Length: 504
Image (tube, helix red, strand yellow):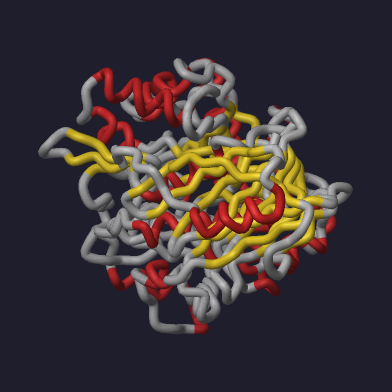
């Protein structure tokens, strides 16, 4: 969002601050409202509150030590970047990946094979019956994904990566195709849709995943009773071996992979590349095949469970209750409806690490409301102990439409006809956090959005700075009062605004 900076008025707040302590040390206050982003002012900590204390910060407590912000490297993102001039590409890559940039992303997610933002569907080995993986290759990745990563590495050579597949090679699946369910966007026969629920039966809905984010029911409405990955030992071991082949192939390209997740969204029964897994199949593959294979061939690579995009807590608990499986697990990854069960699961297993594996992608609106939603998501995941937060597409063209017809948001929007780009409200929502929270930052306290629509997060950087992220997503202004030790942060937040307070 290339917006001319305008002076912003904090008159009410400053009058109150002046009355309490005009000689107090001043700190940075960054605020953003729609059409008026990244406005800079000064604020002072005071000896008294000016209103009800929203959050009392205990300097001796810590929720989690943050590790990294990440994003996903997709083919359609690379295509969007390619619409622009080299100078514009360099500006964007610097702002997203450079340690001196806006977002300072240090982590990348890679899809092992095609996902829903690939140009078309593919895997790394489509030779049926190739149990020795003689024909395994990453040739398709060398066309877009690897050049994309290398362009980012130019601005941060220390980038690290993790992987997850959307679908196994089609010949390893019970119906021999990439999607789970038939739709007008694929060639899968509707006659095979019954496989999802097997003998139990039930009405399938290829668009059910579009309901995610509403938080008003169980997702999925009905759990799959069939593993779409063939549950034959030859297939399962070959699939596990393919993860290690992928790690090896990327290592040869100078791209280090240090974490593996067995499946993206096993609970979205998709018309695009996907794979449904039962709890039993999930346990079997990770415990008997993927875990032991990684331990033998790549002991330096961690295995996480996920990505959990379901709020069916009993199902998640059934998987993680397996003691033998636990021996291979280093952490868990949550996204979408999984956010609802994250706090409870983390309380049950505090010994594991937790990440947000995918920020929610919206509906192609690219509007301020989408920015507010992303601001709240970061508040929720970091406040509930996630060490990493990964974004989905960071740059898309036009309305962000995928090959299967879902329009999605991105941090940067490219107009393919005018060949111009815009930093979206979500970009600035992310900048309010990522520009100040880096590796080693301690998340100290948080207040969820709640009915007052006022999320707050308090962190302490390795340099000892206090940083506060706060939002006001109501239609009227709200006061903010935080107690940090014996001092108070007092401010008035404009309607539908985002804020960062940096206190040295």
